[in-house]
Image (cartoon, rainbow, N blue to C red; front, side, top):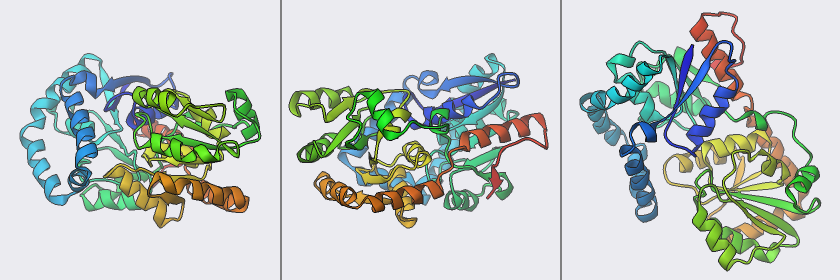
Length: 377
């Protein structure tokens, strides 16, 4: 059977999560069909992305207010009832043309579109959350199963009206490259052309290279030689260009363009610094790499930061200038680094993608024995 995996745009955490689930869908049973909403709605997708980034850069407090505000969510529900059924028709026509039998959605908007389309109502819908929180825009009805990252997100879904028996605690899906045996740090560094013995800091801004990574790299320059730093720029070519022009990167500071296979960089790292996107955190936790929260975006990433702080899983650098002191602390106390690593490992769910795929197969085929360790919330 053909199963659509719908995400917002590429590259993104939503796309990475969809790809992770697809890796565990056996081709003898399921043919995954990737659907990029920005291609289905070419005008709408870029408009939302531009509006989102503009709000973040100019008035982040507005996005934080809109993100999970009950009144705004209530107003949006009126929009869903009146306008989205018409918008959903285009997606419905596409999925019908592709002979789709079920839908896996890693983004709230695509889940809403499916639930509001009369033509898609017959399709089983599986909604995969990619942050450690559940905002009010996830649809409470019409979903065969929700895959939640942790208990508080499951509780938020229940509070919004989602049936408890359809909410499964699985974690956030990560790709197979983060779940198998990893090379030792020295071996990973050697493969990447880094110094095998130097303490290594990985700076990441997610798939888009967001957050003030330039200032972070600048703040770490006095430590270079004692440490080495790798900056994952994602699709942010402007960052790479500015850094190479103004920071004069040397052998201990490297800027890396977007990569579809970042696991080796994580394996090489002693410490990860960056904005706490849900998939970034899940990947970091899967490899038990200590994390420093830096430059989180308002909304979901602030709430992801709250999850980390509640469970004492990460330190926080409110500004780039605070990073050197935090890194020096770990350099001086390797036991603190090891303790942080163990704490993250205890909360990790590296096999989330496998468990989600197994549950989807079970529900679609009626196989009561179906594998996986997804469990009700």
